[in-house]
Length: 417
Ligand code: SF4
Image (cartoon, rainbow, N blue to C red):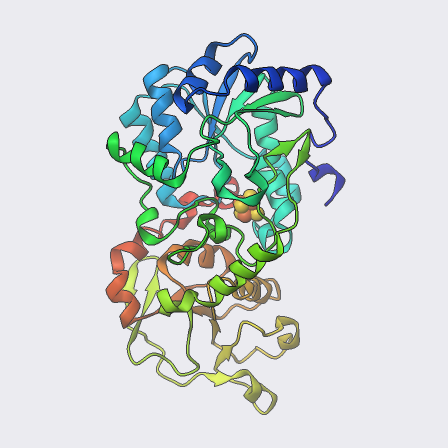
């Protein structure tokens, strides 16, 4: 990782005084409920000035609701990375209004740092740690500067790296408070049901842990809720969470790795559209920014292997293709279709981006994506997505149109625009 992208407080070990204070608070609050821990932490002089940090994700509403009951004026820091799902931005607005929270602070990456580190908006494809550093870790560290403590929604059950989570943790120069540390999934569910709290709209679509759109996928039934985050990578944390000033990014335990791989392999059982066939679907339509339209390309797509024999007006590219091999060979190619063989594979986005960087001006079509990935496809350089009739029945036009305003949610585009 470039030095200027290193987490700002990575070198800041907690002082012995802070470590001792966290231990004393854990002893004092050992038998308290989550509600009591949070309530007391807001005003305990041993904790100090405190803010709630919320992603407005799948379970965030629990702490947000607790805070609204205790004191609606307390600061809530919301990291708007520029890569969030449109649904998350809408949910944030909905919760702010419904819960009456009056001090929600949108924290954004610093424009100059973002332009320097991620001018194309595709850093997540090459180096997700660096992307998280510039979009999350650095902005949050700056936003937390006035505070002595911050509240998180982390829980022991969420990951092996959280199995020993305590209510209070020394975290670099400040305390981290985890009121829900001991909650189980059913506690979360019961709290939301008992208080009739609205769910994040993507939960119903299988997203049980929700972060940035490019790095979040749905999970299959029975799968670890966080398996959909950075799927296929060993990365488990965004780097925001530190232990004694160091990001917790330990290796995935052997058993967990096996589980994730196995579940990734079974994704197509629950999401058949994630796999594409070599033959075109029997019926399909094209999704563009203005909605569905009939496919106006009627000529066959040539497989990549045929390009060695003659130029192709329409070319099919597998996600394993190396765009560099196509350099100077696409002058007569009017349309390229890129296959996405599974949710776990983001190489198709890289192919599109590389083709655009190489100067390809023709039409770029993606096949094998779902509506949730439309904005990401457009950012990568695709013009359109081929949608099978089967998928269109499950995800009708309005779901694609909801992502059509992708520029509004593209931080890079807004900066340029
Ligand atoms: S979660 Fe993904 S897109 Fe978001 S900051 Fe991290 S690497 Fe970048």
